[in-house]
Image 1 (tube, helix red, strand yellow):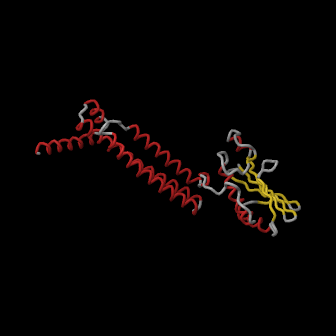
Image 2 (cartoon, one colour; image 1 turned 180 degrees about the vertical axis):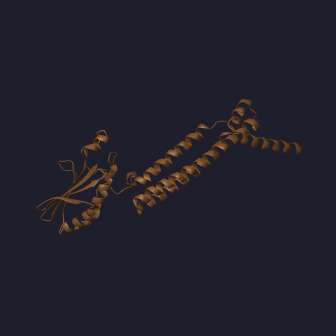
Image 3 (cartoon, helix red, strand yellow; image 1 turned 90 degrees about the vertical axis):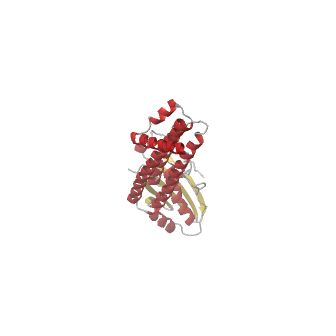
Length: 276
């Protein structure tokens, strides 16, 4: 529910003393008391670098009726850095894009208070959202998926649609891409587990180490895929269906060492066919 100021609000009856519960919750979640008058108190919690965002919680209690109102204030500097696409006050909608991380974090904190007061949580705030992930996990995920995209596009660029060649190439690329993707999701799961249990510096250290390890692992498999792809094309264009221009094009992609290795294999195959 939204009041006339555009703030999230909830009114309910409570037959117990609410202020001890609220004070304990505020102490646990970093909310500070900044105003009090009669049966009304205002709490705030600064967030982000230079208090870019500030969560406010206005609580009124009268004759066992409690009214909670909450909103998020955005600093002027933060709005400038975001080209004024964010208003000076944000509501607590747990969906959307702009400021979704701070909005969902506020919803989780208020849900904890509502649960203690025997009230239902904020609507649609309990489902999974990618913004709920830790920043270190999101950075790692961004790096992983960026490299997976590069891996996929590199393989697509080397693809040739020809009878007898397409299927082997797709098998090679699919197998290596599956291995790299499995490694990415496994490391992502481990990073998420670490982010829930470790201190900030440990989370970021684990993210950096995992990203470096994944990059090295991916480069190895990307090189392996490229080598196997060239060898498959070489077999197709130079042996199975001899096509001089295509064969010379594939040979030009090989290093001198790889050319000598392929020459030895071809000579070995020729010798074997001569014997038979």
